[in-house]
Amino acid sequence: MPSRTRGGRALRALLIGFSFAFVLVMLVLPLCQVLYKAFEFGVRPFWESVSDPFAVKALRLSILTTVLAVLFNTLFGLCAAWAVTRFRFRGKGLLITLIDVPFAVSPVIAGLVFIMTFGRLGWAYPFLDAHGIKIVFAVPGLVLATIFVTFPFVAREIIPVLTARGTDEEEAAVLMGAGLIGTFRRVTLPHIRWALLYGVILCTARAMGEFGAVSVVSGHLRGRTNTLPLHIEILFREYHTLQSFSAAAILVAAAVMLLVARNIVEGVSRKDADYYVR
Image (cartoon, rainbow, N blue to C red; front, side):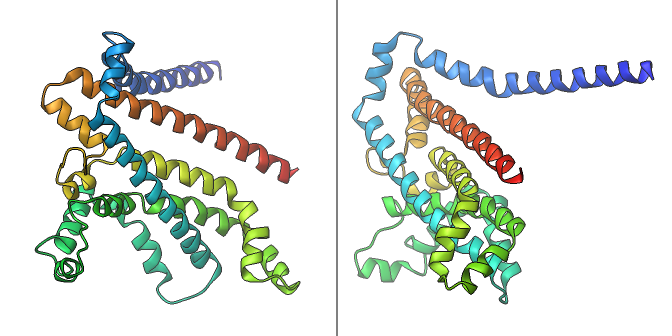
């Protein structure tokens, strides 16, 4: 028994040490290097870099595409999760499978799909051109690409919670005369609020840093279709090191804030779950 105990402690220490070392090398040190490069010459050069008109426009466009993508995917996630877990219909398995498609498809492929659909060679282009609608190499294309890559996050957080809760409380509410909307607002939503918020945070984090699909459909028009990740790539390729790392520091700061928000939500949701269990 002592030998097993010592062996177990050694294995525990080895696994914990390896995990921390891996995270340190792969995540912490690179992020610290980004921040170091951004502030290497002081705060003033950093501020001049991030206040550049093109950087400001790229940041605004990133925020716009993120907000629109999160709003759409939140609405879709709620509707899809409620439909999948509360109704029986043909094609339910297909719907669940299709929700997971963005996890399996490369973002670059997603961008190419939108190019071949809404671009000059796409089947929808004659209609769009006739009505003066531009999607590819314009803001709508960026929004669509961001929606695609962040499609599953909200739905995938809500579906397991609704499945685990069952339908007893909602059926009781309906029997007592509550409508579907009232039942969802007063019975369903309180149980899924933390999962919903968690999904929104994950969707926001993914949308802010999206590069592949957005890069394909953007056309890299500086000041018009360049989001912040695309702006960083262009600066780095042009050897504007300080400017590129300064812009990257903004994304790092946003990622850290979202990570803190996620941990807060996770902690509060656990306390909430413990309260109801008691």
